[in-house]
Amino acid sequence: MKFKNLSKIIGVTLLLVLIVLAALTYWHPGSRTTKTNNATNDNRRSTVRVVALGDSLTQGVGDQQKDGGYTGRLKTMIHEKDHVKVIMHNFGKSGDRSDQIEKRLVNSKEQQQQLKKAQAITMTVGGNDLLQTLTKNVTINQQSKLNVQLNTAQSAYQKKLKHLLTTVRKYNPKAPIYLYTIYNPVYVYFANLTQITNAVNDWNAATKQTAKRFDDLYMVDINHALSVGQYKSVVQQAKLKHDAKKSNNGKISTASLQELILASNASDELNDYLSPTDHFHPNAKGYRLMTRYAFKQMQAHQQWLMK
Image (cartoon, rainbow, N blue to C red; front, side, top):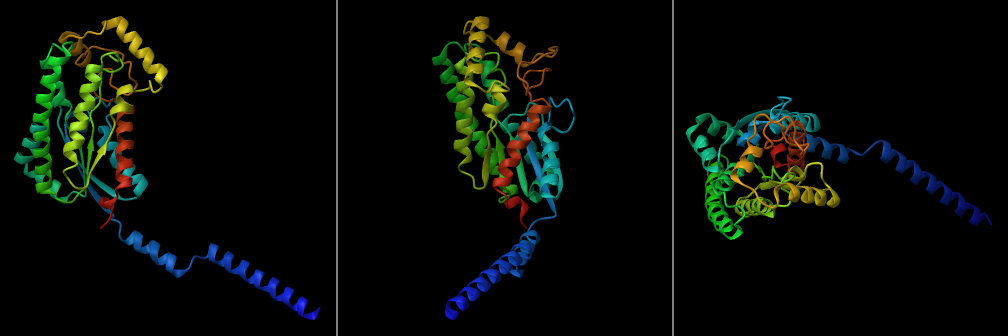
C-alpha cells in the first residue's frame, strides 16, 4: 500500500511539474524563439523602393479620388501592413504600348537609375497593344479574319514584351516583377460577344507564356475580377449576355466600340469597378482591387522585403 501511495504521489508531482513547465513555456518563450524573431526582423528592410512601369493603369487614369491609382494605394498598404517606409516611383504614361514603354525607359536616365535601385517592380502593359488591333479591325464579326489579325498582332506583341522585359532585367536583374494581366472593359455591355472575351484571354495567355521565360516574375491576374465587375454569379452573367444580345444582336462596329470605350460625356457606368468617364479605366474601387491583388502576390513572394 505504501508503495502504491508513493507511486501516486510521484505521479501527481510529475504531472504538476509538467503543467508548470508548459505554462512557463507558453508565457515565457525560450531564448531560442526570441533570437529567431529578432533575426527575422533584422533581415527585413526598413525602406523599400518600388518602381512602377507601364501605361495609363500605372499612371492612375480614372481614379476620381486622386490617390495615385494602384501605385499610391499600394505604397500605403505596404507601409501599413509591413511597417516599412516605401519610396514609390511611378513612370506610367497613358496610351503607351509595350514598345513605347521600353522606348521611354531606354531614353530616360532617371527611370534607369531608379530601376537599378528598386527592390520591387510593378508593370501594366498590353492593353493598348490589343486595343490598337481591335480598333483597326472593324470586321470583328468575321471571326476567321479577326483571328488571323489577332494571331499576327499577338506574335508581334510577344516579341515586344520579351524585349521590354529583357531591357528591364538589364537594369535590374534581381528585383521581383509583378506584372498585371489586361481585362475586358466592355464585357458588361457586350457579354454575348465571345470574340472580345477570347481576344483578351488569348492576349493574357500570350503574356503569361512570355513571362515564364523570366525569373522572379509573378502575374497579377485581374482579368476576371475587373471584367465582370459586380456581376460575379453565373446567373448575373447570363442575364448580361441576354440583355446584350437584345441590344447589339451579336454585332459590334468600330463606331459602337469607340463610342463606348472612348466616350467623354458619359455620366454612368454599368461596371462598378470602372470609370464612368471613359468606360475603360478603373475607378477608385477598381484601383483598390488592383492594389489588393498586387499586394497578395507581393506577400506570397517577399524577397523584396528582405535584405
